[in-house]
Amino acid sequence: MRNLSLGTLYRALGLLVDAKLLSSMAFGDGRLVYELNDGKRHDHLVCTACGCIHEFFDAQIEARQKAVADDLEFDVSERQLVVFGLCAECRKAEVRVKTVVRQ
Ligand SMILES: [Zn+2]
Ligand SMILES: [Zn+2]
Image 1 (cartoon, rainbow, N blue to C red):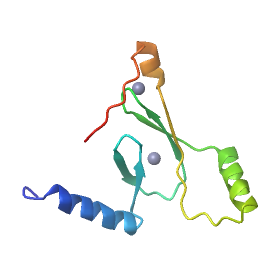
Image 2 (cartoon, helix red, strand yellow):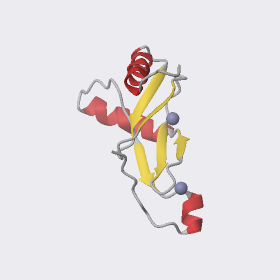
Image 3 (cartoon, rainbow, N blue to C red):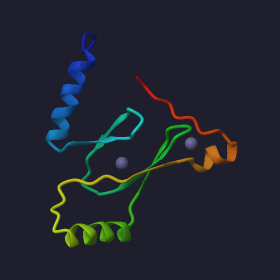
Image 4 (cartoon, rainbow, N blue to C red):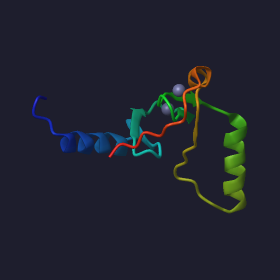
């Protein structure tokens, strides 16, 4: 694995996403986050100060999204909900919001 290039690694990750073993999410700041796909639908809260990610599931949000899509006769193939803000820890520490953009 010592000579594994990043390109090779990303291609491998892409294959695992295609095979639905992993899911990937774009978190807006240039980060792509991969996680094991356990088949359980959930959404994410992302702290823009420390970068921590909290997962949550809300049946009402799911139901509303489905209702909106149904109204528009929209066949949903994929959906992502990412909420950005400050986590409880960072709010406590009064860290100023700082978006880290990775090139
Ligand atoms: Zn935080
Ligand atoms: Zn997740």
